[in-house]
Image (cartoon, rainbow, N blue to C red):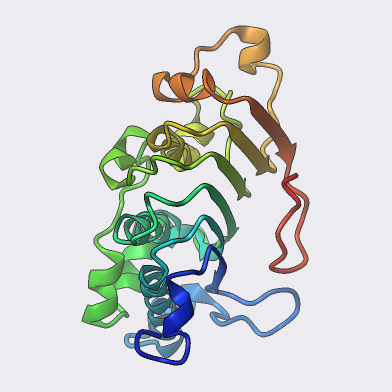
Length: 253
């Protein structure tokens, strides 16, 4: 885009929506029909294409230095979910809009590709099918059980971010026990909140429903980092994430 026909407007663009899917929706042919088999095919073109597309879209974010609103939909496979999220965080860190972004909407649609194998095993196998350029882009394997604190160094400061919407299938409620397996497996998404000192509105859409042992009934203490965040939030709306028919964003107001 730099030097192209849209060069004169990119610095004035305040809001964009980015969509990346590693699989297609509904009854359409999937980009990756059977990832379990694809892992055995060195040089698989579909995997190479989808991650080249992701790399291109993450680089596009650098072209908009004055964004105030960013809406992102990422369709990921379980085995690469942490890697794709870390790439997203790095793209924000490398962007010029960290100091202007006021609203972030992140939606993660995940699809199982384990087929009875471990996430680490699947990621390693698919990683080996990619070009060196895409391997460097995704980075090394992020081990299973990577916790909230483990993403601390990856999370960029977002000094004026005021509103966040997280719509993620397996996301635990922020009030869940931080020692629980759902929180250990997927709670890393919440570290983004700790880098936004002006955050005042949080919307959480998930299929994980608080059980009878939720903090409201058992007095489980929040993760200390999240406790500091929640003390400042004025609007919080936990919701159940509906089953989705396509890449549409839920209303957040």
